Length: 295
Image 1: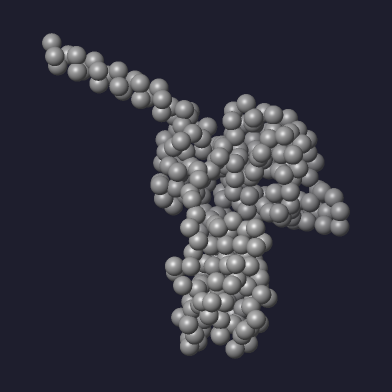
Image 2: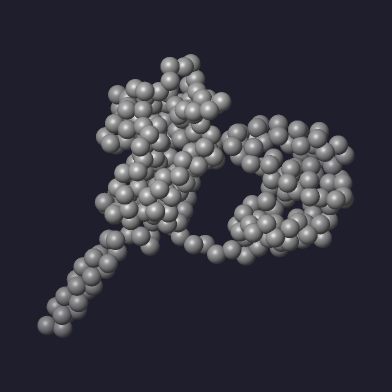
C-alpha cells in the first residue's frame, strides 16, 4: 500500500465530506505524526503499535484529551481505508484504548478581569478580533476565516459560514464590537484580499492571519496583563454574561453554534450567578405555601 497515495485520497475524501480546511490540516498533521513514528508499514500496524504510540505521546507530556484526539483521527483513517478504499485491513485502534479524561467546565473571565485584559490590547486589529469573540461568540477559526462580504453593516450582523460541523449561522454585533471593527477597517491595508484580518508585519504582511497567529496574540496580551486568557475563554465569557443577563439558553445555543442544548448548559450552568437568588426566592415561596396549608 502506497502511503502517500492513501493520504492524498483521504484528504480528498475529507474535503468531499465538507470538513473545514482547518480540520483537514489538523487530521493530516496527526496522521503524519503517527506514520513518522510507526516502524512498520501502515497495513501491518497492530494494537501493540498503537499502545506504544500512546506511551510515546504521554512521554511528550500531552494531555489525555489531546492523545484521544490523535487516536480518533488514526481510527477514522483506518476505517476509511476499509470502508471507502475497500482495503482488507484491521483497524489497530480499539475502542477501549481511549484514555479516561475528566470533563472540567470551561472557564470564563470574571467581570473585573475583562477590562484589565482589554486595557492592554493596543492594536486595532487585535481589539476587533477579541471583541468579536467576546460579543459575538466567534471561535478562533471563525474569526480567521471571516470575510468582508460576510459582514452586514446595515443590520449589524455577521454571517458565519461553514462553522463547526459545516453549519452556517448569523450572529449579531454589539455597538462596542462594531466600533472596534470599524476602527480596524479604517486602517486596514488596501488589498483585494477578502479575509478581514491580515498580518501586519514581516514577510507575510498583507496575508490573512492564521489561527495560530491569533492565538499567539492573545498569549502575548495574557502575559502582559497577568491574567490567564484564551480565545475560547472569551467565547465562554460571552455565554456566561448573556446567561446572567437573563438571555434564553436556546438563544445562547444558537449564537454559539451548538448542535445540542446539553453542550450550552455545560458551558454555562456553574457560572450562573442567578442560581443563588432564584433558589432563595423559590424556597421562600415554598415555605410561604407550606405555612398557608397549615392555617
